[in-house]
Structure formats: C-alpha cells, structure tokens
Length: 141
Image (cartoon, rainbow, N blue to C red; front, side):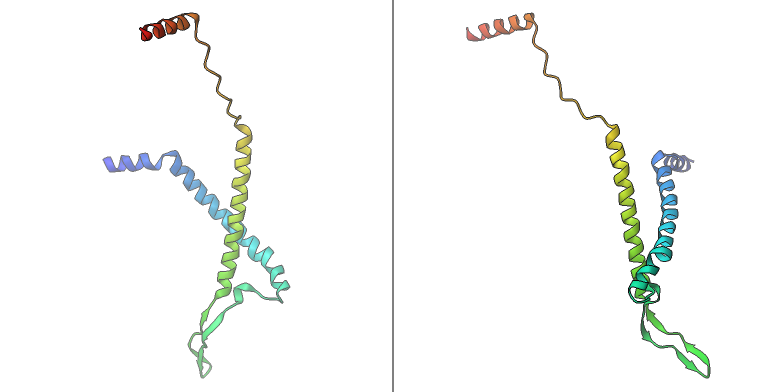
C-alpha cells in the first residue's frame, strides 16, 4: 500500500498537473500550427516556387513492379518533402512559443518592483560610541 500512496502523492503535486495541462494544450497548439502551415502558409510558398507541393517531393529509389496489370512490389521512395514540411512546422511552433514566453516574461517584469537600494547602517548611539572609545583606550595600555 505504501507504493500506491507514494504514487498518488507524486501524481497530485502541482508540477505534475501543470505539466499534464501543458502537454495537452501543446498538442492542441501543435495541431493548430500544423494546419496553419500546411493549409495557409505552404500553398502560397508552393505557388511562388512553381506550384511545388512539399509533401509530394520524393526520390524514387526503386520503381514499382507491375506484371499483367497487377502490382507485384510497391515503389520504394525517399519522402524528403514530408521532412521539409515537418521542419517548417517545427520552426513556426518554436518561434510561436518563444514569442509567447517572451510576452509572458515582459508582463511579469512589469509587476515586480525594482529592488530598493539597501539603507545605510544606522548611526551608532552615544553609548556605543563611548564604549568604543573606552575599548580603544584599554587596547592602548
């Protein structure tokens, strides 16, 4: 029973719950950005590059074999267009998260007051001055 209660205590910490929420929101955010890249951003870029669809870019390593109108073996391809698409997705997601964190940090800096300069130590009292003089006189003798 000890391990179960220890796991429950671990799982209910604030950091674990925050991490779970972050992963769920990050997954949804990733889908939004992937849709933005593939549906909004890449078509105009493809038109600028001569109608190229990045996901369709590939190198055929071995052609498919067809005998009597029947495919005997499928083609072997190197789909580098999907890699280009995934790289662009990653760069846009990373930049978006960077900008969001930068915005959050700038908002937090405004809330925190600047640290005050430390006050100089208080002037010693008359009694302390007198005791210091007596100490110094006794040291001389």
